[in-house]
Amino acid sequence: MFENLIKKSAMKSPWLFHINAGSCNGCDIEIVAVTTTLYDAERFGFKLVGSPRHADIVVVSGPVTMQSKERLIRTLAQVPEPKCVVSIGSCPQSGNVFKGSYAIDGPLEKYVHVDVAVAGCAPKPQAIMEGLYEAAQILEEKREMIRKAKKGVKGSGVIEVPAAAGTAQVSAAAAPASTAAPESTEAAPEAFAAAEPAAAAAVESTEKEVASK
Amino acid sequence: MIVLKYLFNALIFPGALFTILAGFLLSGLDRKVIARMQRRIGPPLAQPVYDFFKLAGKENIVPAAANVTAYKLAPVLSFVSLAFIMVFIPIFSFSAFSSKADLIVILYLITIPGVALIIGGSASGSPYGAIGISREMVTMMSYELPFVLVLLAVAKKAGGDQLVFSLKEIGEWQAVNGSMLLHWSMIPAALAMLLVIPAEVGTQPFDVAEAETEICEGPLCEYSGAPLAVFKLSTCMKMFIMTGLFTAMFLGGIRTGFAGTDAILFVLICCVVTILCITTIHAITARLRIQHLFQFYWTYVTLLALVSLVLVWFGL
Ligand code: SF4
Image (cartoon, rainbow over the protein chains, first blue to last red):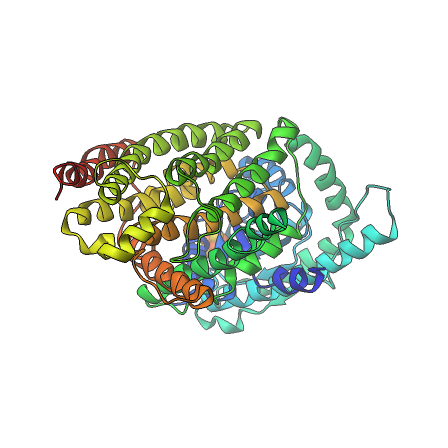
């Protein structure tokens, strides 16, 4: 009965949960800036929430350090479907200035399918906002896919995690101040993502059970 | 016929449906106005509706550590008790159901959402929930005392010699003698009530139990999907019920003569009260610590209510 309203609401009220996977805090400050008076993400319905269970969009910053890896996977598994993952900054994409360090185990695509990647070091709030807005549109598509999958295979109990049309890239062009972003490394994780989503999805669904215990 | 009438009262007007719609309006207005106060554009007025339906469409994860029955029934309990309170609150001249002890019934029913939150939080098996419910209990204890004193002051004022707990009679008394707010001895009680409302609803300076930046929204930490949607809806409904109770108790003397215009006026006054006591306080304060909240309510707010009670007792 309320199908249309739910459909419309899915992209009008995306709640964000922020995971810091070893970020230098530069990106975190920019994420906070998005919700402040000047940029006011709340006008699109974005809201930072405190618990991953309430989230629709998971915002990840940082190069995925060894210490944060396990927590990252467990936290991602706690987010109810449909969900989107947005990576902020060049760190989750390539490792950025931390690339080659013994302490990091990136990129983020190894663990989860990234729906939108916002490049830059740190990206401007405008760029982050555009990325989040795009993620909100993807959210709606994903919900539709899950609904169709549920209708199609009734009773099997397995919902395939739908991959959106490919990792959307928000270019750093909106953020001229952040030209330091290593553009050339962006292609590598792209290829990675193509090979991994199935594995990542498998990890996720098993982790969901682990996390709930 | 009488059964049908009560069913209509409980489910549509002024029960569940009316309360939900008005609650959405107040909650949306609260978010919009606070955004304007901070010089932001703010979310659309219908944002709480979007939030509710989005949550309703999401996956519902039940944690393995949870007690499933209590976990799922807690939001329903919260919703049902709130849907029934509005039946007891007269909308100026229109009163759906009136008994001798409206205020006492309301006092009991209005604690149930808090209790439901405690049940749900403890059933979810989360340590954040455990911290949240202990804070929720302390919060409830803090505001109940001044709240009861305010109700007593109102009951004594309207009754004269004896206490009158029927909201309908209180409304009629106000129609004859002018609204409670026009009697100077009741102004401290009205102020106390305005300060009880944000704690009861759980908004900013008094939202220690659901502090999302400290304890991941406490009792709601593990909730997702539809049960969370119902809890969020309860908050919206509570907003309307508490401001509605204030309007009925302190501004009940206004009469337009028609049920329709009365209802519109009632909601408008509720909007003003919401902006006054919820939005403004939210915009200018930061979250209190739990002991400060307890101190605040048991000293200043209780004192305000007590002043009114004593004045009324001496016949002023
Ligand atoms: S992208 Fe730059 S600013 Fe962001 S976390 Fe990495 S090093 Fe810090």
